[in-house]
Image (cartoon, rainbow, N blue to C red; front, side, top):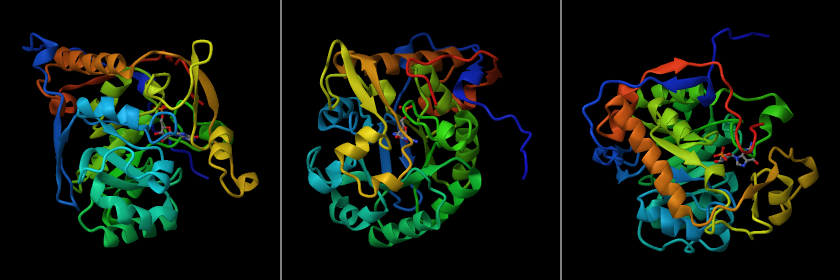
Length: 335
Ligand code: 5GP
């Protein structure tokens, strides 16, 4: 048994220090990034935020609004098998990242041509079958930009990149409807995970997605400042018109993809043997998602002006974190 004495941090453990800046307006900030991917050799330009591939959030209606802002939507997984063209049938749509499980490699290959990104998304990216799965997907789709996750450590980030991933998804336990930390005791503070894995990936010219744990635009800013190339959000997009679900008494249901709700909905096999590591919550109804997106982007732009970053790309170079000791309680309450 070992104890790592290094202090690891979450988004709520830091703030970003303001700096002298010559930027006068937040609208001078360039919010787009251009990434060139290490294996696919493809180039992508857009606003590097992703809607999570959760049932309630990864919907065609969400895609319609987000793609207008050059933001990526990850379709909920059931679309891959049941309705792969529900979002768009454009060749390599740059605003879609379609991910499946290890059983979905062939269906991903069949449909890969439609999506800007494809990937393998499992709760635990540490198993040998994930590495084998990435190798197989890379062999079958040599030109695709491939996302794989989730992990939280530098060694595994590098291993997945060497196996063929262009982008590694980072996060075990930070999600707003995730109960992995309380059920299993497993996890890693998300800010530190992002910093360490970004460093490891960038050393190999690859990229990372900071996945989960953002409850405010300030958290998204901290993820970018920590080195994230993309930030994935679920709970922040819940409760909108574009979500899958009904408004009942001013609330909408939002649930984890490993929750009892998701398992029952998709009739997943062997339910009794699977750990339920997600929960179901009611979130306030918030109207159309467009206003929320404008608000999020405005928060990020403002952060860039506070630290003198003319482009989102420069944010991580311009930002200095200071440690704080307050715990910010979230609307949903992290596990
Ligand atoms: P949020 O932005 O809501 O904090 O986090 C979204 C992320 O939580 C998703 O992209 C996914 O990685 C993770 N997630 C979604 N559902 C579940 C679940 O049921 N269990 C766990 N452990 N993580 C989940």
